[in-house]
Length: 114
Length: 111
Image (cartoon, rainbow over all chains, first blue to last red; front, side, top):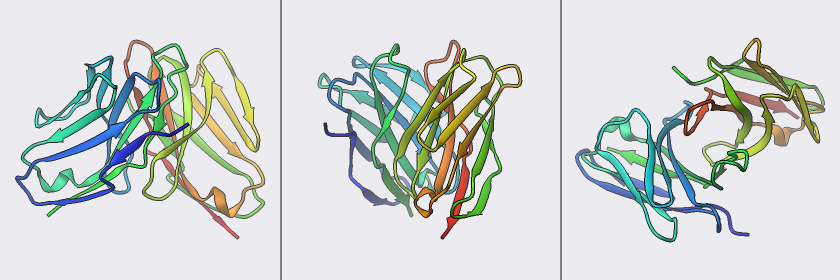
């Protein structure tokens, strides 16, 4: 069974640019979560999508947005990049609540903003 | 903050010793989970303990949960160099729709 995949692996952007990160969940998983992990810190919850809809959002500005496609894959978009957006962006998937809410993580996308 | 906090922030032990990490949280939970993260990579789920459970084992891992103290501990017995990683607790909080991760414990096992 293939795990959660993310692309690209690494990305370098300059301040003010826009970026799109992609995530494919485990087959059969309908929920996708996005987290930001700044260097040396814990995970900060960004967004949760389930069945194509945004279900919950963390304490991040509106320039962080995303969507979930009919095949349950997801994109995270970040507009007007700032230096502090440099981080590891992790995507996770899970079955709907009821399965213990265990999350399976992808390898992450390392974003560097110069 | 709804995040948990791990203690200690960093732990260094010799191979073969036991490692204990603690997690404290602030609200009611449905379950608490422990994850492991190798340097700069994705997290791997280790173990889940439900709010009505007090102790759970998985291989060399032992997790305890004390809901009255809102705390959990992760014990890794007979540690190996390959156990070197960061360990995070995450809480599935009652009424919330996402997991809240702690700040992590960085474990170094010296061969």
